[in-house]
Length: 193
Image 1 (cartoon, rainbow, N blue to C red):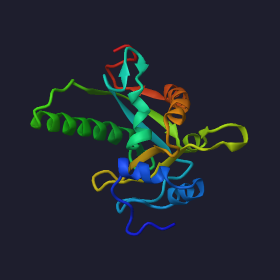
Image 2 (cartoon, one colour):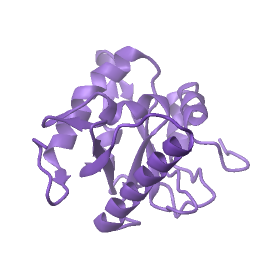
Image 3 (cartoon, helix red, strand yellow):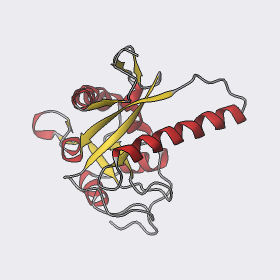
Image 4 (cartoon, one colour):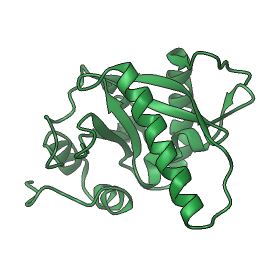
C-alpha cells in the first residue's frame, strides 16, 4: 500500500482510516513515511516521550483517563528521542500548551490553567507488542506512526488500530503501567502536586 501523496491530514481522519484497514495493511503503512516532514518511519528500537499536563492528564498523583485516550480518537502525540532531546520535548510541550491557551483566550472560551509537569517514556517495541483479542485471535493493538510536522520533525502519533471501547479499556492498564515506570517530573513538581 502506497499513500500518494503522503497522507495528510492526521488526527481523527487518519485514526478512522487506519482502523478501517486490515492488520496487514496497518503494518505496511506503519513501515512507511506518512508525513512530508518525516525523517524516517518510527523504528522498534526508538524511545518516544509523552508530555503530561496538570490537571488534564495528571491529578493528585494519578493519571487521568485523558492521559492516553487520544490514542483511540485523534492519535496520542509523542516526540521521538531519536530526533530530539528531552529538553526539546519539554520546550515543545510548553510551547504547544501556550498556543492552546492563546487560542482559547482569543476564542473567548473559559479555560483551566494547564501546566506541563511530566514526561513519560515508552519503548516503541513495547507499544507495538500490546495486543487485544482472545487467545489465538489476538492482534497488534497499537501502531506508532511518524507524523512529523514542519516545526517538529520528532512528532509521532501512537494510535489504537482496533476500534471500540473494549479495546480502549483493555489497553488503559498497559499504558498506565508502562508510563509509571518511566515518569520524569519537571523540577519543582512531584506526583502529589
